[in-house]
Length: 448
Image 1: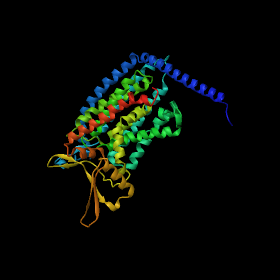
Image 2: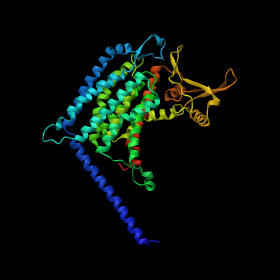
Image 3: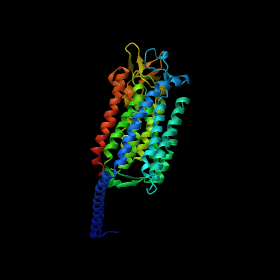
C-alpha cells in the first residue's frame, strides 16, 4: 500500500523528536548523577579506602615475611622445580606455588574489609544493603574457588581441557548474583552500526555466556603468557595498577559505587603481590605457580563483571589477547605444540633464544600450513624447511608466543632484559593504549 507523504513526514518528526528528547533526558540525568556522585563519596568512604590501604601495607609485610619461612616447607612437600633458563639450574630447587601465600593473605584482608565496609549499616535504623553484601560475598567465593582449583592444578598438573572448565565453575556464584541483582543483558551498540542494527540489543542468555567467557579468558590468558622470571606476577600488577587508576578516575562518575567496590579489591591485591614480584624477579627465588595466574585472573574478572566495566577490562588485556590469537595454531593443534614453549638458554652467552618445534611437513594440514605462512609473513614467527637423514622434508618453527616473537625481533636477550621488554609492552599496549581508547576514541563510537 502506498503511504501519503504527510504521514511519513509526521512519523519522521515524531521519531526524531523522541530521539532528541531521549538524548536531552540522558544528558540531564547524567549531570544530576554527576552532581550526586560528588556528594555521595563521603568521609566514611574515604575512611574505608584509607583503612584498606593500611591493612594492605600490613598484608604486604606479612607476605614478605612468610615467603622465606614457608618456601622450605614447600620444597619438603615436593612443590619445587628447576629454573630451566639458568646455568646449573638442576643443582638448585626453587619453591613453586608461592602465589598461594599472596592469595591467602589477600582473602584474609578482604574478610576483614567486610566488617569495615558494611559497619555503617549495622545501626538498627539503617537499611542494610543486602544486594551489595551478596555481591561482595559472591566475589570472594569465586576467588576462593579459583585459588583452590589453581593450587590443585599446581599439585595435580591438570590437563588443559580441565583448566578451561575450572574458571567456568568458579564464576557461577558471580553469574547467579548478577542475575538476581541486575539481570540487565542489554548492550549499547556503537554509532557506526546503529543505522543498521539499532541503538541497543538485548543479548539474553548470550550475555551470561559472555561474562563466563571473560572469567575463563582472564584466568588462562595470564597463564599462557608466562615462562620468564617475574612475567606472570609483573603483568598482573600492571593490569591491577591500570584498573586502580581507572577506578580513581571514575569515582567522580555515575557508577562510583561499583568503582569503589573495585578499589577495595585492587588495593590489597597490589600490596600482596608486590613481595611475590620482588622474590620472583630475576634471578627468581620462588615460582608463583598456576595459583597466582588463576587468582589474578579471577580477581580481575570479578571486578570487571560486578563493576560493569568488562569491556574496558578486556582492553587492559590487549597483549594477552594478541598472545592468545598468536597461540591458537598450537593450542588447537593445527601446528604441533610441545609441552613447554619456554625460550631456550644459550649457556655460552647466558642469553635466551626463541624456542623451536620440529615436525614433518607431511603432518601439516592445509589450515595449519596457511597459519604458518600468515604468521611468518607478518614476522611473528620464523621457520625453515630442511631434509632429515631419511630424506623427509621437515619444518622447524619458533613457538607461537609473544615471548618468542620478541626474541625473533630483537635476537638473543638476557632473561631480565626480556622480562623488562615484556612488562613495557604490557604498559604501552595494555595500559596507555586502553586509556587512549577509553577516554578519546570512545567518543567516536558512543554518546558519552
